[in-house]
Image (spheres, rainbow, N blue to C red):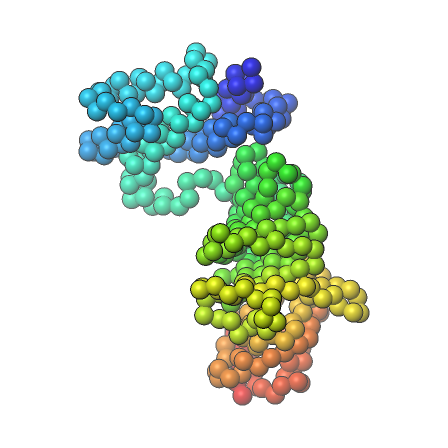
Length: 369
């Protein structure tokens, strides 16, 4: 009964005839049926493709053979018309309902057909971007924004960051791609874990609060956990899973840069491409705040940080670019914090502890001995 009902509701959904009450019913049924999840996702992708005819017979034949193989048809003597009619019979929503699994297999075959036959035309005409529609939020340097996700989760996006998630978020899956830094407050859903893809790291979440920092130009990827439990998997070593518990922090260095990780040896995990360091977060003794989330209060906190890394944080905060005329200056180490200081005040504060010269021209700061 539930299978027939899923077919009816899917047909209404993709004909734009479904009511809000029926949509809630469909979401509930999809959660109970994994194969229906796949069908719903495939239908969504299928409906977003603008079809274009291709007259190349060789390409058509190659696509038809791919469909045969996927569906399980082995007779190469079948005509094109027979294959198409088989497909139409199997995918009739109302006349013949033979189960979700058949629908998934056949629809996947059609998507394969579209990919092989139509993709070259699509790419040639300048559409070579992701096929699936994505919601994308960006923040400029010097700003941050709050994102309310469809499942009730909340993400605060730091300056110079980008967050992407699919339009079916919360129905069949919860996946996010992050470039930059964000604070996550994730709504608990044990049946549908949320995954954050940040650089070379995948973070699996069920319901928790945590901070992730993964800027493209930074030498490290960092994750700090405040409540709940998260599981991290490095794409460079997918067999190893690392669990973080509240008040723990992980720092993953990018290849060829281990100098920033000054943690005890017993808290380091070495692998061929990166260094993974675990540590406990230490709150500020004055106000019990954490440096990892100071940016939420418009503060920039840095502890034993190289000038070159501090400079990148200042670039995002003040919407400027910093260039060092001498590499030895970029290796200077600083500890401190900024809250309401202007760019000039921040530079003067740094210069009071270690002497250097600076010059500001057209939003570019030149730093020299």
